[in-house]
Image (cartoon, rainbow, N blue to C red; front, side, top):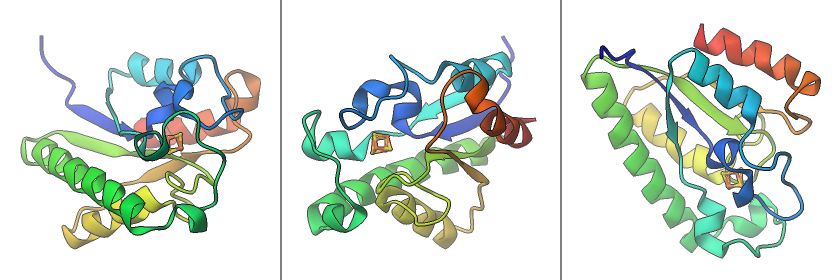
Length: 161
Ligand code: SF4
């Protein structure tokens, strides 16, 4: 089977809402509309780890970026960012297209647009050092599968088509 060689990076909880802070889950499992759109376009999905889950597990309370911003949590994110850039470089050097990154708007860890989350700060910092420019979009805070997600789905289609 010939590969499509098109890859997208997504924040962990787009595929797995079970990882988010109680009671913020907006789907029972994955954001189906987003994932089905990626699958229907034959795009390979690289799921980033969930740093907050790694750091504080499932029973964590909602916290601000300032509350998360300590050495231990930064180090977790630096390691994830380093690993991710190694993965991205391998794809790029083998002729794959890395379409971009989908983050989670206003997340203290995974927000990309506006006030960046800690993981995205670390990831974009290393990507810039490596002269790798990737497009990125955020799932908005009011996204739900179905009609409410239509605006975001248009943005997603711009990114992947
Ligand atoms: S936004 Fe990031 S840190 Fe928060 S639940 Fe999703 S993947 Fe985990």
